[in-house]
Image (cartoon, rainbow, N blue to C red):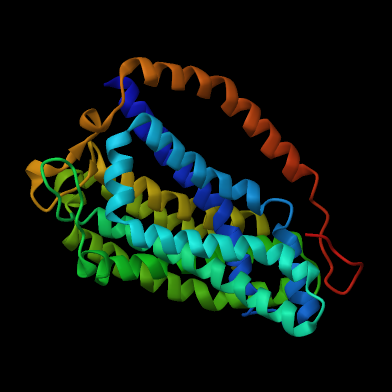
Length: 337
């Protein structure tokens, strides 16, 4: 039981890391149509995440793999019940991924613009759909005693899930704009700063609506009032930290605040789920961690492997980011992605 809870927490951590790292990639992709004025500027924005986007994306794959190996019943129920949503997420990630190469090799301006639009669309769809799916899941969905999930359209698409999806997009956007301020020089940096001053107040209004809907449409505050309240307050405080960094032009504080507020959304959802992994409209059919877990032997082997590999991966990520600290100037030398 202890190892199954540990792996539930590890999966939550992996999703939180994914949103922190890939969140700014999504935001940069959105910014290509919001602050960039020409092809050079859009390609400069793409180049700013070029060395890292694929590595950041692997945290989502790792989270899914960890779920499959450690809590297979959760994986089976979630991925079958939300098959079409996850398929659309995959389509978004694919068109965004190939847009890097196709933009670089396109021989005409029209061709480049087509793939830059694909880059933008592939940056908006995944955070919106993933957050929509997660907020749908925690409200409770139709399930049978075997753990099979049968969510209908309005179980997936409702006020809370839509607000959650929009909040995920806005949080990713401000995070991406804060990253742009760290990585680029010139007018793009100034425009990112100016746009964030506009987006943050909209985000705060969205967070208020989000908190109200979570209170009334989930059992988070009924079952885990204190922890849910603390985490909700932390989401707002980290967003305020990011906004403070924008107002005072402290780029590091802005980036840390926006990234942590994104990650805390996952903390809120996993806190509300515990000790369940899937919430059914009939509470008797909800899947618990202990029910979804793999064998003790499997979890033990996975834990040993994780203790060996995670430090190595962490060192590599830190090293890779230290290699690309020089600011990019869109009007300067050709940049690579």
